[in-house]
Length: 292
Image 1 (cartoon, one colour):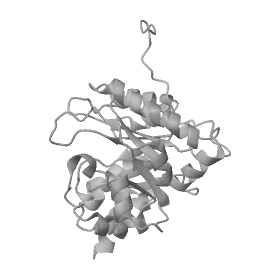
Image 2: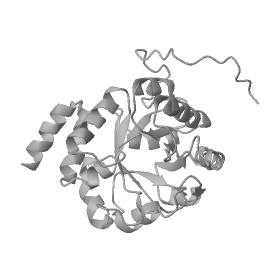
Image 3: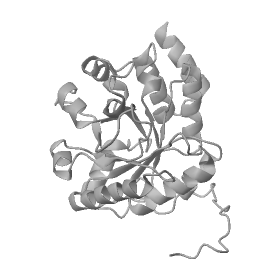
């Protein structure tokens, strides 16, 4: 066991200094990966902005039919022009997404209890690497519970996926889960994102919080911010702008897009922030102009 006595609290994040190992390949932390990994990552992250707009519609794997996603076959294809990456389950993608879709695929491979069970922290790997390859996944997404009862098993799930991904050059997206009893603080997210990155995940999905720029600086791979619960559109755009301005490499908005009354316009507004450098005020004006 490592000796933790006398460890000092980290504070020197040097947030003004760019990540060092990021040339010639532009995706953070991926410079030393093989060609296949880089190819998949270049499908996810735009080569000009270096960022990505993901659309999460994997809620049904534990929530069943979700408000706004009752008809995946109608909702998701409509939104595809405004997004870069589809994040869903194999069942939803196979049944509802046209096979000629040109978008990158983030395939949810972990699964567990339904929303009827209060403890969602004990997941399993439900999709093997062979089917991920058949799905032409650009990354495989694994839920990781740090500090929860299911921490050990979720780290085991993550490790299995990373090992398999390395064998077949498929990146892993480590999804930092936050249970009802877990703190949503910079202290927690610094711990969780760093653990998941050091295990070998190539992308981290987590939440925005105070001192987010320090979390980004301390994490050696790209961080994509989850949208979380449905917010009023203007607040969601502010969340998007704050995340990108503090160093996030992308946004994975689900409910803040598909539960919006004007979902496609909302998706395009988020895209303006991620890829074109719009402020939240500019994106809000664009959104209003789009719906009027």
